[in-house]
Image (cartoon, rainbow, N blue to C red; front, side):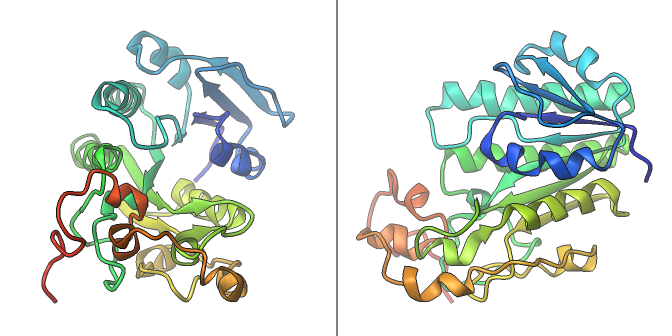
Length: 270
């Protein structure tokens, strides 16, 4: 796939900044947008301040764009009014504008919290039904459903990456299962921009032996992670919370916050 122009939303965020250099190598113009002013870090970057809650900002942003990498949104648990604007209305406006402008595909940041109420004893793949662990997780399920709808109805291809913790190295025991190195995440995004698919869900994790995720679909599309949390396992094995709910569920503290009843209550038998 030939890419002339890629739009990156939420381009000022930590995760977006970690992959911008690689994305810039894939296109003629890397169009970066955020709600706050940005600094350029590459020769082919153009900078745009915009609030995606306002649909009037979208037509100019997506004009001439081949593909979108969507990172914008509120990145943690919050009350509904915050999430409705940042994570629901922005998704509606972005997909509507992208479809109208003839954008070919969107690679978007979903989250491990879309399935965070699965027990850590379970290993799941991309076909596992959503089990969000929080209001934030629900907004990611909404984005996955929106992407599926527009792929089927409008031909707007999309890949959702259920990102774990992205950083140079894992920081505690839970991350041994869902950590992704920025280089591996950049590889996944590149696959999302170039591979042949319709709508896909993959897991944004490195080659971690303790992973809760069967990521065979990503591998079938060409994903070959170069990093692993395994070298950190001995040092981090004891770095855990004291919360039995957080320790039972993949979503950790997101699952534990507001959980009513004992730790086993939402778990499925078997």
